Image (cartoon, one colour):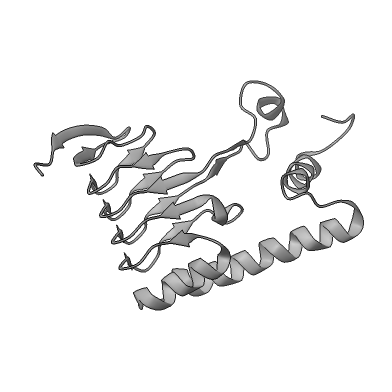
Length: 177
């Protein structure tokens, strides 16, 4: 961390480094990228039409397979959408949140200590069902044909063919296949 750097400058620097942007033009590129992502996300977030929502999320860089269904009010990482990979035939319920990063944005003490920005891909495998209000954190893989129960917070990978529930989410059932 540089001398008298504030939290905004630190976060901007981290993002500029991640996206390989430099200088004043790089700052403009970064802000444009985030504004575009936010705009497309806003269109997707409020749409009752799953196909339109998926198109807007793909335009943001989210990798989405075929035959998926997204309910309204799904939030997919605004800063790193390209790190979210959703395979075929996945269902995302309303108010689902998927994060490819965590960041103590305003707390420089934590950022420079044990809790720096964490940026890791999220993968949701084919046939998974993420029910309303679930939260998927950075670095998580949701297994094939698994179900994340309503309101669950997924902090660890979910195996294939399982039902998870709770905060933190834990396996409560294996699905016969």
